[in-house]
Image 1 (cartoon, rainbow, N blue to C red):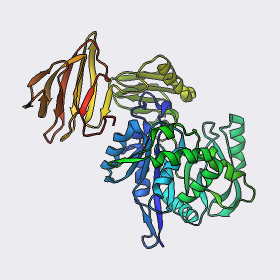
Image 2 (cartoon, one colour):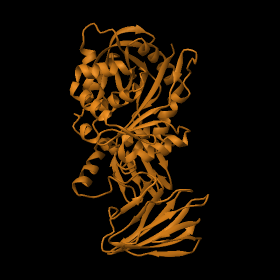
Image 3 (cartoon, rainbow, N blue to C red):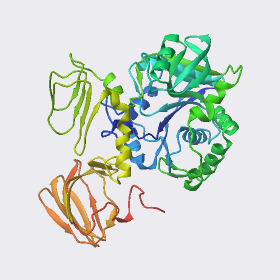
Image 4 (spheres, helix red, strand yellow):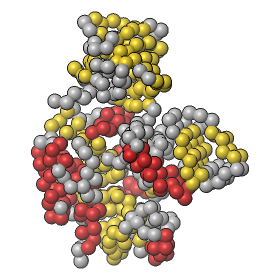
Length: 486
């Protein structure tokens, strides 16, 4: 019988330490940092071309677990890779990785299969993909026999930002019994771990059969297993989206794979089925701007400069400019990140403290931790380019063949001007076409719809006016993206 390999992509992170690039509505896994593909797409691609012996193994399309807010980002980025039929499990609320993996395992076994799950966070970088695939195949073979496998990253420095795995008895082929997990250490302890040679960085990568995970989560965290089982029993399919029961999943406790199961397996004396494979393949979790600088090409002065950047006597700095000219003169060890609506300046030694900014924004009821200036929607995107009391100007880009929902607004009127492409407008009981430099007016309270019937992107300048201009002033009547609550 063939061994089925089921990649599981966990995509629930928000990447707060990479603010202002990474934000809740468009977090780091959906951004491109190290190549043309996003981190999410790189993760999917790592297992796409694994050297599988097709006579003995079958590689299935990924199952993705993600936040409801990110469902269209996931679907679009999978589509770009040619994966149109992947199951995308939507979490109504974040409950950490143990419940996410439990839902994925239930999905993987829903038709009586028991595949080997290759569980991967969606936001990591691996430089040597060939080495990763080779080590992964060794782990899959062990998992097919019933073992629980994980990867430990061979440490290159005394890192205090990662948890560690302690090696147990050597098994050969740079694999070891799982000796234990330890928390993020201080600098002195991390130095001792490095010099001992007995510790590896915890990668968050796990390989095991679906039935093994379900048995272990039921044994060690029956409360999580029961809540996920109830939520999955209420699941309904919406195209590729799998919507689990909201109420039971909201009641599910939050816990990580490590705490819920893996640490307990490591603590079991004589457990010969929990294995850690040492991986030396240029891995990084890209958990901070400093980490990103370490995997990005540098100039002769140790600077990473991306965008319209000028440097003079600058050293060891990370300089990103998205929209404006950025000049750095006579500085060192700085991180400067410029976007349309925010500028970050931080010393490299404080890169882990960027999360304090997003905490401040939340407490201040601001939006810069949630949205970029350009907000993505399943039909395209919009960007606010000017606003004031009782008015706002936006630039809308609608994908070819896409349409906004049929909707109305109680508090604002809209004026649309086409600057590129062709628009089909439905307003009240009439429908008509607008070409470039043509415009129309949508009165307050009138049902309307905007569509792009063409083959190039449609660009619209929208001028809103009214007493309230919030995005929640939308009453939807029909929507091809199923954004209307049942």
